[in-house]
Length: 438
Image 1 (cartoon, one colour):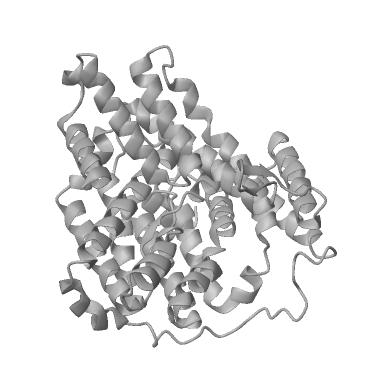
Image 2: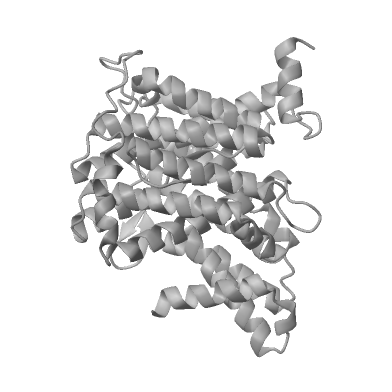
């Protein structure tokens, strides 16, 4: 065993986790390819507030790399971190545009929520929440994320589109991009069924190449290398917004950022870890505190650099599906983020329809834990079902957890089995009710 192989084995415990360097590298590439869209989508959303697009792009990449590196070495989990979709929209369209705060104040709010995350993690409050959630709900969270991520894939492919009367409907299958996504789904599914190593990554690459003659994959005038833009327009800008934190209206903003990030990240950690077989015999997540600290630090650093709240990414499930089991997968993702500072045009060449089939297939993989839920026991089945259903139907992981926890607590209360509910679950239920009605 060479020096670097020995280092990787000691650091990430590859044999103990029944994986190899090759498998972890493939998993890292797959995860990065499915979440690389955030490099361009995040600055596109935040720049609507007046923030500099190039600076936000660099901040997005650096915050993602920092958080994912910490996840790799501190927690040793195959989970990547980046600015969260939904939270960036809340940042831009609610805090800034609707409430009228300057974007610097929004960054200050993100910074404060990051500090709160760090404190909660150091006190092990977040870890206690993770371990207090019943196993049936943890399994349901994994399946719910599977449905959610499949919906994202179907939407990105154009197979499912919005409809004002029925909410959703079948897309136009005659569009070249939709046809390409369907062909990509067939090819990738075949590669998976044939147990081809790296099937998901190979599916993305093949679909991307097939998109060139269709004009879907843009290669005209493509530059391979480019210097990263300046970070100075957003670096440290949050300090100019700290004065706004004294305003009463900003307190609910900080609470909302804290709440959504907390339960989005919890959902992703539990769901992906369940699929990867990382939960122990009690259904607890070892090193949960270290994993939660990773996104807490990423959020704080991201605010300093100039981007919105960072979360654990559900697209990490694509790397897990490829066999990723350790932080080496995350290390590869982080290095690819750093490389994208100079190869961003090449990264941006991959169209959404090329990664959409992978998300759909990962959704299939994520459904496996549902088989371990006892659907003959209504006290377990109803909360689990609500958890799974609410996530895709509300487009919100956190809401799935909220409804699952409330259903679990109140069903046990009204059936006289309240003693089976942990104190932490009771506290969560009260907090969720306060958020709904106060």
